[in-house]
Image (cartoon, rainbow, N blue to C red; front, side, top):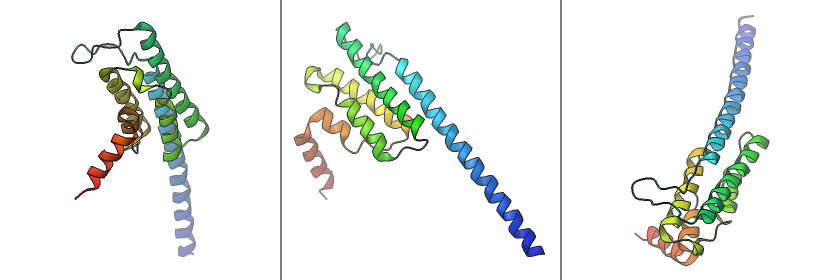
Amino acid sequence: MKLLSIFLVTGLLLLSGCTKAHEHNDNSSNRVIEQLHQFQKQDHFASDGYLYLGVEDKKLKELLNQKVAQTAESYIHLYQHSKHPSKEQRLKVLSEGIHQINPDTLDTEDREQVATTFEHFLDITGLESSEGILNTWMYGEEINKLIEQNNLSP
C-alpha cells in the first residue's frame, strides 16, 4: 500500500512538473514575440549620438528598417507556429533576413550597423552564434574562410 502511495504521489508530481514546463515554454515564446514586436518598431539606423552617425539617405534608412522589421515578422511567425523553434529554423530566418540587404550598397559604418542590428536577433531568440552568417555577409566568403582557418590554427 505504501509503495502504491509513493507511485501515485510521484506520478502526480511528474504530471504537475510537465504542466509547469509547458506553461514556461509558452511564456518564454510569448516573451520572445513581445521583444520582437518592440524591436520591430525601433529605428535601427538613426544616429546614436556618439559614434554612429546614422543613415543619411532617408529612402535607404527606411528600406533598411523595413528589412529588419520583415525579419522580426518572420521570427514572430516562426514562434507563433512553433513554440520552441530549432536552432536551424532560427538561423534560416536570420540568414534570409540579412541576405535581403546587399552589403556592397552600404558604406562600412552602415554595414557594421546592419550586422550589429541582426546580432540583436541572436540575443532575442537565444542563439549563441550566427554560425558565420553575419561574418560571411559582412566580409564575404573568402575573408570569412581565412578568419575561420586562422581560428583553427594552433
